[in-house]
Image (cartoon, rainbow, N blue to C red; front, top):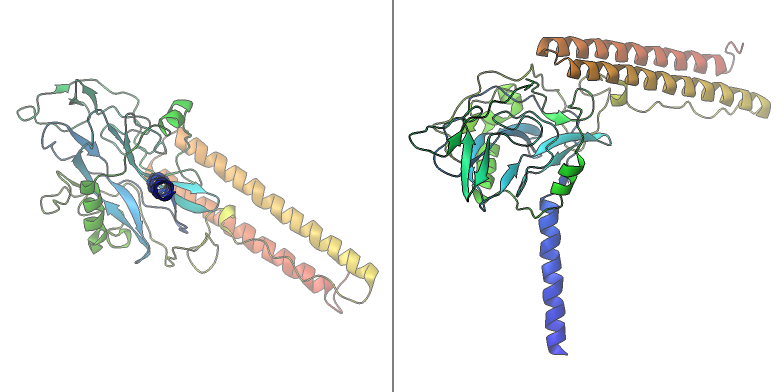
Amino acid sequence: MKMRTVCSRMLLLMLAVLALSSASLGQLRISVAFGPPAIPVYEQPVCPGDDYIWTPGYWAWDPDVEDYYWVPGTWVLAPEPEFYWTPPYWAWLDGAFVFYDGWWGPHVGFYGGINYGFGYFGVGFVGGRWDGGHFFYNREVTNVNVTVVHNVYNERITNITENRVSFNGGNGGVIARPTPQEEAYAHERHLPPVAAQQQQIQVARGNPQLRASANQGRPPVAATARPGEFREAVPARAAGAPYNPPNRRAGGAQPSGGGGRPAYHPNELPPIQRPPAPNTGNPGLDRKYQQQQDKLYQKQQQERQQLQQQQDQEHQRMEQQNGSAEQRQQMEQRHQQQTQQMQERHAQQTQRLQERQAPGGNRR
């Protein structure tokens, strides 16, 4: 009986450890009211030696300072031979930005379609491959000194877009979904980021210059040859796109059209507020007023949806045409103006209805 109890406790402990491991490789729910900056433009440091795998830089979120910070790209030894790195990524989901952590596994899985460069161009990895227990580097997309590393090959990569958007879905995000093959890769045996990667994250988080509000999307340390070696680092040559951090940063805040930056799109506006239920003392008049309120509410909801669909289509066309950063900025400014005009028009409509329904108002 005692042995059975010990075995049961050991089983429960193993299940708890497995559950924690699975959670560490899944999504981390982070409610952020604004998306991360674009991927900055930077050069890849030279590979320091055999079997190092490139792990691209990305924007992480620090809830303590309520700001994004850049985790520099770096070369890392894989935890096991034949293992590849699937980068982390951000995605817009159910009114919040969600962070999906990176992982090691026998194949490169889905990472949001984000173009991190250096072989990670949105789908899979073309920067190198394992062969016979050793990693071979594609010199077309990776920076390798052949006097130090001899396992190399040349495979030309074509049709690479220069989209530097850093999140999936939502307004302005990359439009990509996992393929059936990538979904299958997600169920393979995975390992979390190694200790060297965790060190890179901690050093980056503690550096105020790597916060987006400080560097405007152009981090002074964009990449390192090895994790933690920030003194001999590669700075970003430019931001991936203009970045203007909003005034309000709240880790638990939802997108809003007030109190922070103006809303750019209808789905960032606060919900339409219904007027108080009519109470004139005349049941027939109350029903009439309620019908008027419902009709206006439905009309405004429909106009929001139509404008959102129109703007989503423009985002998709811009994505397909690989528009420049200037073109994207002009489009966002136009969307912001459209959204604000609609919001003002709806506020005026609601106010006029309330005035007509007020005692002594024009009830035509």
